[in-house]
Amino acid sequence: MVLDGKVAIVTGSSRGIGRAVALALAKAGANVVVNYAGRADAANQTAAEIEQLGRRALVIKADVADTEQVKSMVDETLKELGRLDILVNNAGITRDNLIMRMKDQDWDAVLNTNLKGAFNCCRAVARPMLKSKGGRIVNISSVVGLMGNAGQVNYSAAKAGIIGLTKTLAAELGSRKITVNAVAPGFITTEMTDGLPPEVKERLIERVPLGRLGAPEEIADTVTFLCGPAAGYITGQVIAVDGGMTTVMK
Ligand code: NAP
Image 1 (cartoon, protein in one colour):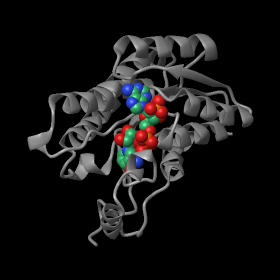
Image 2: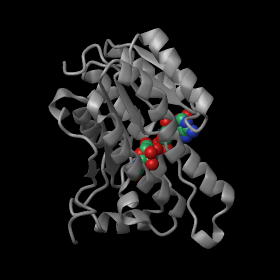
Image 3: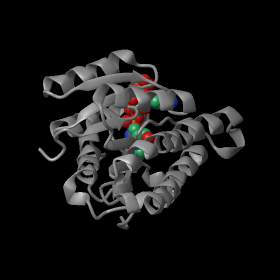
Image 4: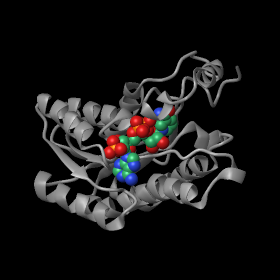
């Protein structure tokens, strides 16, 4: 298997896209750190499924926005699993509102989790990856970081920030064989989108050339490719996995 013996941290892998990524990396051979913020039940369930695949799973509660908690997560990974090859920055939240109604705490919460969280994790893994002269970092952005979206000024800014972070780190870390790429999902069926009213979902689907929402596994497949040997010469890229939404007129 292409990721045999590799160790991956997937932030926010208790549910949704992160969970699908953790399982896909495990299927490809990796041992996986299942990180979560509050839902221990869901994290333990993901870990149990990874272990059923014959891989090791390490469940770690850590708020990615908290520098010290992230450092401890990386230290614990190295201590328990012995190495660190892959980081997938997936943890994310939304606090949507139009700008006139957006509160400071909603701006701060989204920027702290979605952008500073990714920065914290990249900084914490940089040293072990530089030391081992190799690594893969995949950051989960969003189509709204490419296009903007009314009602999501905080989330769009964070997801656009992820793209700048990705390109800069690709430049900083490339000489040590560490690739850094971003995946920009379109609208994917998870708890994050479950709450959208049916008419909003219908309007979104109308904008998607492939005519449907995406599945978490479809994001996981792209992430797994970027973490594997077939993607060794790809870095600094943003790959939209969005049913054609951002590139095709419909
Ligand atoms: P989700 O179902 O709401 O899951 C979010 C995950 O992030 C959960 O595992 C949650 O942990 C974790 N998390 C939240 N805050 C955290 C924190 N401070 N520290 C550590 N973990 C934290 O979301 P999703 O739809 O799978 O989205 C995953 C990623 O894809 C996000 O970055 C999102 O912005 C991006 N994305 C999603 C879509 C979409 O349509 N769904 C589209 C584009 C991009 P707990 O279970 O413990 O709460």
